[in-house]
Image 1: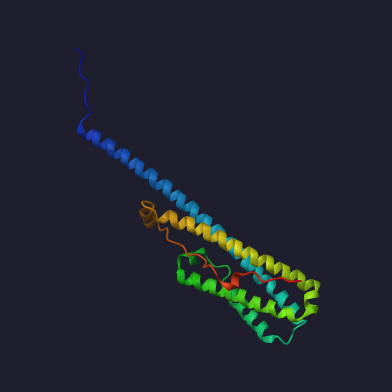
Image 2: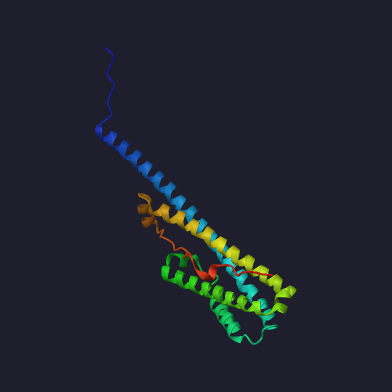
Length: 205
């Protein structure tokens, strides 16, 4: 008779099962963690693009204001509002993306930028009363650049919100939320929709 095969002892089977489960857990953790890193980097990249457009708008303002002043110098209140809003915005354009994990700080960032956008709308509104200004080639060029920038701001904000939504949904799903909590991946803030300052100034020739 052939000798019966020796069975593995119970303790060996238990060790093998534990090793396989541990390996699967490590694989799951590693894959989920790497996905979170990728999504987090995507949010950071989108954030940089938003900041780039805000910086572009910030840089356009001095030339725009000076051009309008040449034709509407008595509109001092509007110029003061724009200058003050620009000054406040200048301190919060290039801020760390850590602000995305602080809802209050992010809300302040958005409020400052929205305030600047609203003051620019008022500036553009007064130009309707100055036909010579509207006919000025330099002004027309600046006006077009501003409209394009405001449109790009709106587009980049939308892309940013989409990136944040994908990231937030991923880290909140089970069991991803456990890994996120263990690894320090926190929910990020969105740009609020429906802000009047995010409507691109109308360009009418």
